[in-house]
Image 1 (cartoon, rainbow, N blue to C red):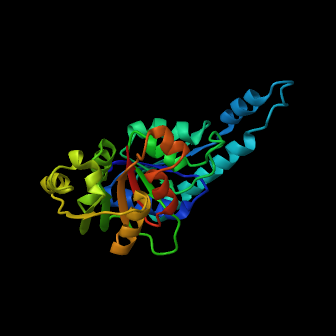
Image 2 (image 1 turned 60 degrees about the vertical axis):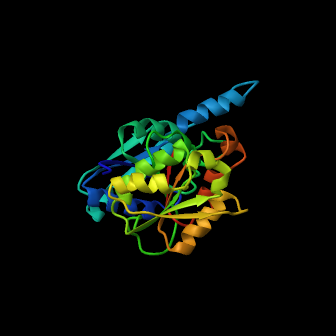
Image 3 (image 1 turned 180 degrees about the vertical axis):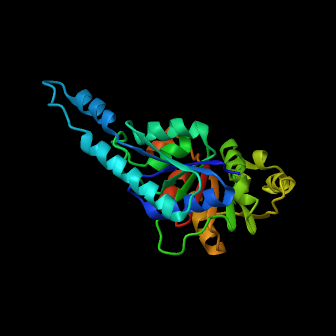
Length: 279
């Protein structure tokens, strides 16, 4: 079970929905919930002064950033009390969100964030905080998209995007607490002939056996597609009525994944379902 859950409690990307999912997970598993907000101020010092070649600029007042972060934590605290979370805490970090969350991920079971957070000021050329966390966090990342429907714990019907990689395997292991409570689990293998040596004679069968030993019954679906795999997986999951996608956070090389995009980028940008990503 997820006994310590870390949530990025910034004001962007559907804070309320994300918190309700985190609170429901924490209450269901009797877990400890940590809400973290980072000011981002010190990173701006480095970026601003590093870009200056002539006279240094005047000092920047970062107190408003710190005050805003603390106000957001007060909001997190108030909502946790209203939602009846039994065990929780708030953490203010005077650093970048990436530094704060990656460090704290060492000491938790699950990290929760929104789909497209724009508040990490240290990521000047790319504001894709979830993608960065998916590739560098020590624990699986649960990404909650914005939405209008009722909020429930994701995982009633789960689609696993399986490509027989270490990243996908770690994602499945990180999703086991949710897989164990799922009513339906589908292992989706796209273009299995491209990685025949890794998949074996029956692509997906070994993973189904592994899950069965954990008490998870899973069905295997194999298909060929000319679509980009992330796009195809999103479509298949949506059509099947799934409410969670589990996948490895890896596409091409990690540098290409970050700069050019790939499966992880497609999932984060296109999925209307929660994602659990591991690497």
